[in-house]
Length: 198
Image (cartoon, rainbow, N blue to C red; front, side, top):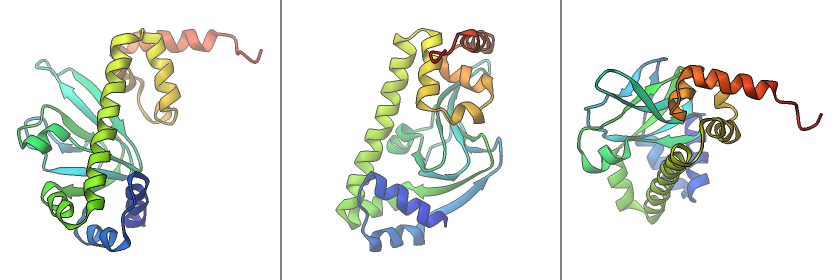
């Protein structure tokens, strides 16, 4: 079943011939990560891209005093990676952690390089994956730099309504660049606003 979901996710990005999908299935590594388990620790070199079949993961930065800053969340049917580290083979400046018990496909960089040589579809997939990750990065920068805190939360709910039910409030606050007390105040203010439907 996981391989079928993986193939569906690949084909949503670009058309993958059946033979190529079978090749990937034969070489991909599946891993279960318990809640709180790290898939990648800051300072390690990221050697893989990942696909989330089940669960929820976060990518985050840590400051010297241990404060964590969430960069992005990835749930079912999504690909993710510490992409800069994977490309440069330099130590990652971020960590990847399972927020829920998660089943992920691990696609090693060496396998990706072989795929790129096998068929043009993998070049298209790699390019589109990089584009998707860049779009996420740009949207997050815009969210933090342009919008006030209350608007950030409204946009978060609009873009990721299911995540609001699955994530602790302090993790959402970290993603939005505000403290948990401010987020609680924003949520209370929104709850008191009259419904537009009367």
